[in-house]
Amino acid sequence: MVKSFAQFGLIGLYTILIGVPVIAASFFDGGRTMMVLGRLWARWILATFAVRVDVAGLENVPTHAPILLMSNHQSLADIAAIVSTLPPSIKWRFVAKKELVRVPVFGQALLASGHIIIDRGNRERAVASLRRAAERIRAGTSVIVFPEGTRSPDGHLRLFKSGPFHLAVEAQVPIVPVTVSGSQRITPKGELRVRSGRVKIVYGKPIPTRGISIEERKVLAARVRDAIARGYDVAYQGPIVLESAPAAGGSALA
Image (cartoon, rainbow, N blue to C red; front, side, top):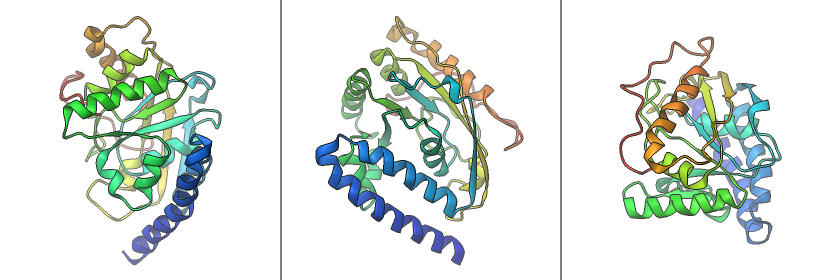
């Protein structure tokens, strides 16, 4: 436990060392510093916790056109693992819940660098945020979103929220399914302890959205969910279980 507290202390230090320059640079560089330093921050975190990230399918990630990356969400390690493996040429932002803005320095860096903040308790504001996100994607920024809406407590693939698919239909850009395997064992939900280990990121083939209507979002969600499920690697964790039917239900919140 003492080791875990020391590691989290280092994460706090990294956040200050990275976050302050990101906030300062955001006034004049459009977030470019955030992408460079964000990748460094992610790698420092993974190294501190002795987490190795293996990656497959990078050839499926378009590097010169905006995309929507949709990933399963198992643990706090997912963000660092994805950021550390994305091609450097991709201009990316996350869809993040409003509660993260309250985290000192980290929250201010999120706001300053233009990540999409979602108020999950206010449907009207959430929908407005997703519309702004669609505009940002069409302008050339790729967006990373976790359609389950929260971390899975057991590593199983939860039902998807509808918000990310409203965003996909409005943006009309390809969806790249992203599968994270093994991270649930690294930082289980509800625990402060972080375990070392291996995580695998698999980038699936892009799923087109051009011409898809809002009425077809459930079919689109099912395709994405199936693609993410097929990317699981049982060598990194046990067999995946899909909760209930693969439907995009629930609120419009991401």
